[in-house]
Structures are given as structure tokens and as C-alpha cells.
Image 1: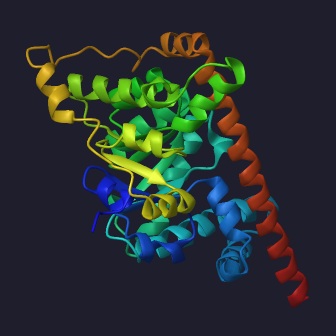
Image 2 (image 1 turned 30 degrees about the vertical axis):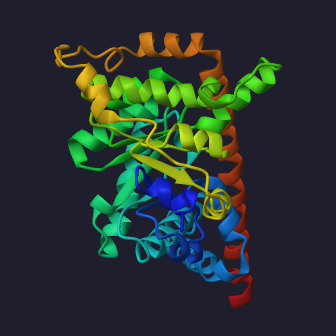
Length: 336
């Protein structure tokens, strides 16, 4: 009996589930799990997770009498509780995201990341099992540099839409990057329609392929985890990548299909082709903010999609905070 597409893919790429709903994990048996502000918001609204919402609300009320501090504490508790429940069900790592409101604040990102790790460690969870997910702005990438270098905290750089972001992430020593495949291609469908973006012509697929070749030819250790994957075509072209994070709908589709999933990307071949190239490659962006910002400014698709992603994450964070505020208020009123 032929293996379904999911099991074929699993031979070449580590499967990561993209969801905060930890109840679905046993059916897909992933190594790792990622969450993002949208997943957290969606899960928080589910009645079955009301206990997590209430636990976080009570935590926020215990931490402060100031509304803003209550909400901040409650949000971190919510994120860590979801993460801890996920880790009970998988052998690997989970990604917990720093609120997008800190996307342009290096120091705040470092502070919040360390708070998240401290909360996990209070639960007996090693920081080795947690990836701090940070939006890939200049400030976010510099915060990750400090976290990795000075605190041994591993970072997942999210909202990667350009080779420039990926280059700086590797130079900064980030553990992992998440380039967004379908969302990258969306820009081209919207702004340059009536062209063929299937297969290797897809801008999102080409972006990941370019990053993959760059990393393995230069000897970068940063892992690549393709995100925002929607079609069998995108997935098959990127089979062989270290990791892919897939939502429940896509996983179910892969399980129901017998589309061949062969190894399209081969790190060994890329590395072999690069033999003889100098390995002491000088950093392009690491300490050159002006150069990075100019490169991003000139990359309209990358800049537009990064801005859009931050706005989406901000809106989701605000909605989740509103749910926490409402729950805290109801608890206060009930005890009055």
C-alpha cells in the first residue's frame, strides 16, 4: 500500500504542526509545534480552552493592580500555558511569540523573551525546548542576536519575506528562520497579476530555495522552516528542507493524498558544490543598520508583506488582550 503524501514528506522533512490547539497533535505526531498570535487568539476563543483563559486572567490580577501590567502578565501566562500543554504532547520544541507590539523595541523584546523563558523554567521546562518567536525587523533581529549570544535563548525569526532578513538572521546566530511562502507569492498575485506563479515560478518557493542555497553554500547553521504553505505544489517543491510548519487543514489534505513527495532540496549537493569557497565570509548586515534598512526599503514585496504581517499580529494580540481583560473584569465583578 502506497504511503500517503504526509508520510512520504516525513521521510525528507521534519513536520511541525502550526496550531495552538494541542488536542490535534496526537493524530499527526509532529516533532515540533509553532504558534502565532492568530493561533493563540483562535484557541483562546474555544470553550474547551476557557480554563487557560481563566488561569491567565487570575494570574494577571495577582501580579498587579494596574490594568496594563495585568494584561501584560496575563498574556504571557496564556502563551506559556498553551506552550507547556503542547510540550506535554510532543518530543521536540514549541515556538512562543513575543507580542508584535515590541517589533521595533530591541530592549523590550529581550526583556519579554527572558520573562517567557523564566516562566517555562518555573514549570520545569528547559529553555532548550522553547524557541522564542520574534518578528524579523532590524530591532527584532538584533534582540535575537543578544538572546542567542548572551543568554543561550534560541530564537525563531518569523515573518521572513526577503533574503536580506534571512542573511541577517544567520549572521546574528539565530537558531531558526520561518520564511513565509504563500504570503510572499500573494504579493505578486496582487501587484503583478496574470503571470504563472506555479511550481518553481512561485516567488515564495524561489525565496526559500534561494535562502536554502545561500545558507548551505556559506555553511550557515541557522535552520530553515518553511511557513505559510498552502498547496501540494509548494510543499513538494520544498521537500527536503529541514522543517515545514503546516496547519491542520494542510496536514489533513496531505494525509488524504498520495501525491509523490520526493526530495527536491538536497543540502549535501549544495554544500558539495560550494567546496573550495571561503568559509570566512564577511557579514553583510550584522553591524550595518543603514545597509539593511536600505536593502529592505528597495525590496518592495518584502517590506510590504513584513508591514502587513506586523499589523495582522498586532490586531490578533489586541483581540486576545481584550478577551483577557473581559475575563479579568468578570472575575473581579464576581468576587465583589
